[in-house]
Image (cartoon, rainbow, N blue to C red; front, top):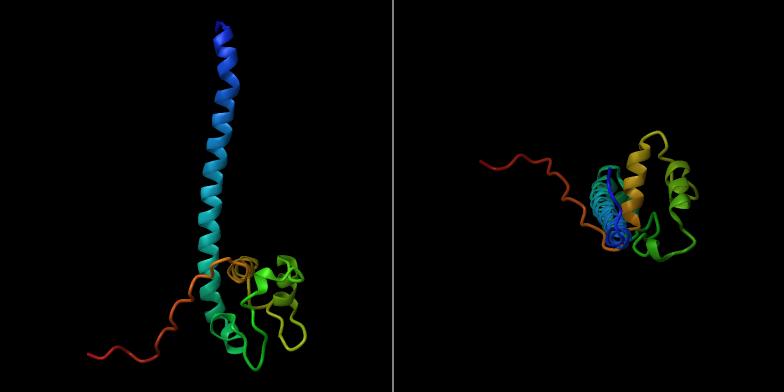
Length: 131
């Protein structure tokens, strides 16, 4: 049988708090790395799925589509509205519901709403390297 002393009663709340803080720190680190991975995957998708064709490299905008550079600051465009736009299209934008998975849409949104957007990977060259 375990005896409970006054000292252990005082230490118990501190131990519980330490356990909670440790768990929160680990969860935050995992979430941050997942978000960063999603942002990088979204950057690659932005190039691979042809978003740059209309929205320009890095989403700076062009003749066919608006800039997406400040999208994360625009309160009129929460993640749910961005998802709807990607999936269903609108105005001049075609729908992408048939060509993107839910995970890919989430990754694109993570990229578009990132505070510090990762640079998209360089497009693969169609020319073989010189020998």
